[in-house]
Length: 113
Image (cartoon, rainbow, N blue to C red; front, side, top):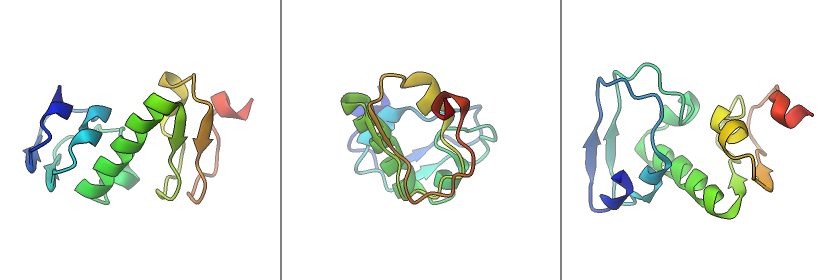
């Protein structure tokens, strides 16, 4: 599991077919540089988080990891423009979802009803 590589400082996953980074990467607290260029179809983390760089990506994945343990997902202050698809598809047991202070304009049907 990639989360066990806690001493890793540099990780390059450049030019693969990665679509989603595993939430276990949120455990990589020493990671200083993550290179993921050339993976055009990454949807998790959302592109707004990916553009902010390594620290933001690890923080986002850590928030997802914490949410999986507590069923409380804090996705506030991330600049999200939409609710991440994984949240409404995979984490149906969530009890609290904080999406405050983002730029979301439309809620997915799973939340809307």
